[in-house]
Amino acid sequence: METENYGSLIKNLRQKMGLTQNQVADSLGVTPGYISNVENNRTAMSLRILTYYARLTGCSLDSLVGELDPEYSETAIDRKLYQNIIKLDVETKEKLLKTLEIWSK
Image (cartoon, one colour):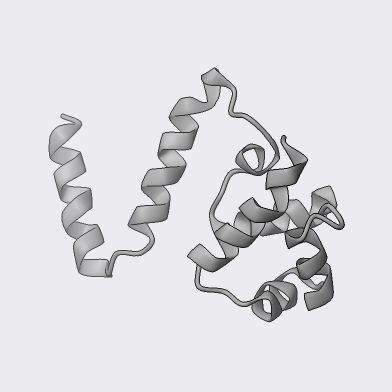
């Protein structure tokens, strides 16, 4: 992982999710100052906090800490699909599921 981009990645993910530093801090059980320090590359998240952050943002843990292994590409695609699906309303999810069932036959 390139450490100079780590804080920017964390910040961009937070902003993409529409979350404030306070909201992220509350969700992770840390202070907003801690989140600020991470985003400004003054500190790195512990593995435990990083795991919670990955779960909060819907990212894979390895996408936060480094390059994806080529063998991981299918799971990364699965994650992208999941991130888009969770934004859909229930009716659209049901339609998507029916479509996928037809395609998989």
